[in-house]
Length: 116
Image (cartoon, rainbow, N blue to C red; front, top):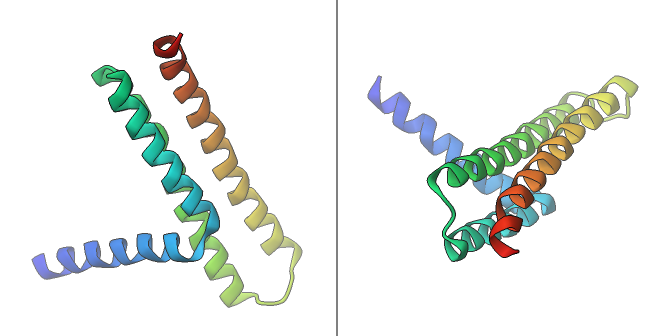
């Protein structure tokens, strides 16, 4: 039982490595994450601000991972173009965009008052 739980963490970390190695957008998200952390430390934001930033960053990473997972699976089961597969990919990409916009807004709401 415990070994299965430990193994599941290994699979999850391998998935994050795959995400970073195969997805150019994930590299951008990593850069943005590092910038958010650095700016938060530099501006000494509050614990509540850190919680909001953590949720925002985490949502973008989760959305990107789900989008990538769906794309890998769709490409395997339907390598030829199909409207429904295209729709599914577009919808999940839209989810990443929505999470990214929300995270950017949260970042602006938190960081701008500290800067100005």
